[in-house]
Length: 130
Image 1 (cartoon, rainbow, N blue to C red):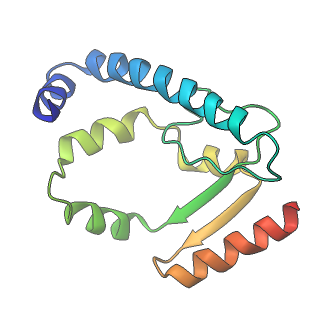
Image 2 (cartoon, rainbow, N blue to C red):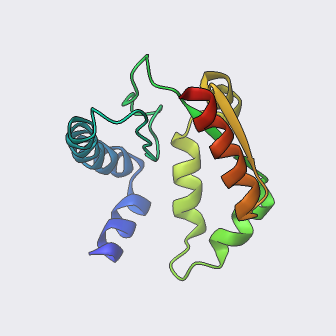
């Protein structure tokens, strides 16, 4: 199945948009179910790829942008068994510019790929919000 999806994405640009539309319909449903189940929590954290691009976020949402160095991201992605540069580039093309995502975010975390630095920043943000 995975190979079929990859081949479909690579064969036509429109296929990727169709797949994203189907996937994000499901993502939106699961997100809403999750939010309903956790509506009494002080803070609920969602990690959803293409959140802004697919307009899944709400105005009252607090967005956190995690900033990482591009070469480091690419280096780590290339280590993955099924990494495909063409697929990567197709997804990069449909993403909003990082500058815009950064502007829309209320908080920015610099990810230097050391667990403690991100963890400390997340704790600071949570403390700030509660």
